[in-house]
Image (tube, rainbow, N blue to C red; front, side, top):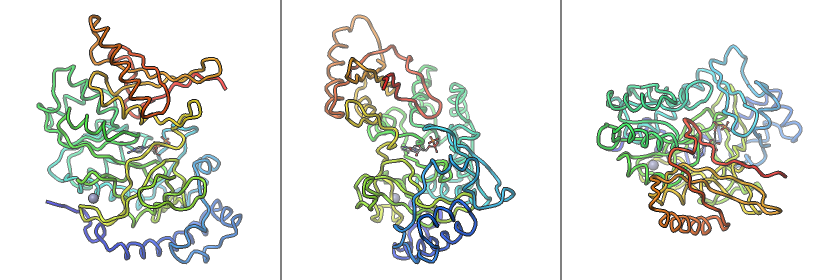
Length: 433
Ligand code: ADP
Ligand code: ZN
């Protein structure tokens, strides 16, 4: 049975949705101009007045914002409300530099939970479910974000947080947990750790759904996770600047529904800043339509993605954000070729002989960059040397065909690649420039 949290919004006529976005955008532009010296200055420099924005068609006239703006105005120079109206702060994990602080009013927190409640309902979660939240709690938005979504739909929430893996598995089993939220790399580790404890997640727990995100992962990792654990794995996307985790796929597993009554998504060609058509990968730019404490205008998230604006199989009319290609700043350039860690993962998960944990090591070999992928063998027995040589050649061949670049495969013993409880670190760059 198809369930919706807010059917009248989730399935609204796309024309009406666009009209609603137009009205909200006009209000937002006035709101930020009147309340934030940062935005007033930015608009003035750009020669734009709130009156110039009459509808969503004028969005291209607005200046962009970037993460650096949040850093420059650290900690709260971009906020549009008084400190006393801020009911919560979070801080980003600082994957790409100095952390940034974000703030929320009570309405902001409610909208955040509402966004997740819609997404959780769309994958069949509800009152009868027991949801284990294994994202980190604290300054990171992951834990508390999905926690409030889970409470909103009336599920039972298990705030496991990150780490303490054996206890997580024991509780999952003993409390009949039906769904888990964490990073895909942590869940891969959980499957492995459960095996070591002699517990099969597939056969000995009630787990049926996983909500995985906060880092890039691939379709092939989804397959591997689903096969090994017997669950349905769904992608979830968000960033601390937009609130935190926000958008989940529906049962169709064909992109994450981004709620158009709350956010306006653009995908732009990184060079021309012009919108690209559906399905074409470009830079993700988001405008928050209803955020009060820290509204963002045309925020360049730093991710590469594409949208599908056609009506989904589930009947929802809001655009879908397709699986992310990676961060524009996650990419490493090796011998002039763009490499995303996700491409390596995509290759590795196709090989059952190796684990999905890996580390890319970049170095300089004279003038040339060298790239080594450290890969864990699932089973390392000394009588199989011949097989390893063949496996190494097959892996290198496959990597070459995906990356257009030779990468040396180095096998390491099972369990040597550091396991992450949150976002996995995939690259060690030893090159001197
Ligand atoms: P940061 O890591 O920059 O400090 P966040 O913790 O808010 O800030 O992380 C947000 C970033 O995580 C996104 O911009 C994106 O790059 C990545 N991310 C989150 N969810 C996903 C997902 N489902 N797929 C790919 N990348 C994701
Ligand atoms: Zn759908």
